[in-house]
Image 1 (cartoon, one colour):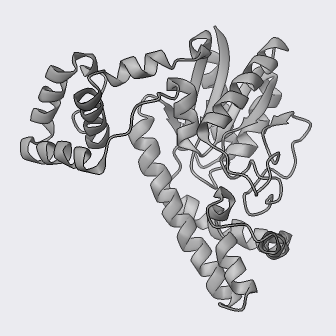
Image 2: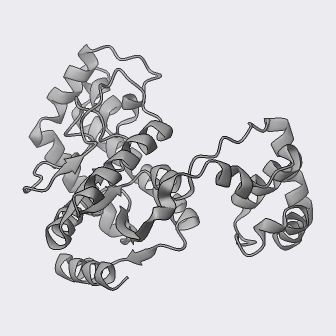
Length: 304
């Protein structure tokens, strides 16, 4: 099986720098797995890598902010890139902070029929009535395929697995199997940068200051001039709407800076919650010293 490196972590954790280092050491090429770094017009605020250091990078800055971009679209593109890179006898290094991208690559995107809010609430009430352990037993009775595939502490996934089987009469694992892609051809080496939150919070303050110095205000102004409608994904780039508010005279630059930092902190918290819930079988690294982190991650890749 061909190796594919998956490198995930929250914003400001140093993923891009580590990916370039690894690519040089293992003859790799880097593929983007960050939903905001796909947009060509927003380089600074999306924290797109500044210098590729001679390493080939894919799926960065190729899409107009006037377009939305789905997980399914990313999955089709990344699968093609993996094939292209491995044909050259190189190792794909997929790096980013969009957890759903990684999940779709590993598990596939199952086209499961929607469950209504009313239907879901019925299952939620059942969970609240039974408690997690008894609900888990009932889930396994309903769908034996769930046994040993999920923790009884994972409330959200238990409810999801139960509602899929209950309302569609088919296990979520069968839905996923029917939508499997060629991921079984690859050996995924899963790496998660689990750095301490205080360390990340300190970094985001410094990073956003650097973004301002690098021209983030001009970038925000150019975006504002495009009059992009609110439903387009690019509007969610951290710091963008805050800087536009300042440029439109609605807030001071200090307030825009403060709100951007707060929103980034909230985003990191959501990322970490998702990663810890969905990436329990990933190898996590929490080394703050760059040289130690690089050495340990490289050794893990070479011995896995």
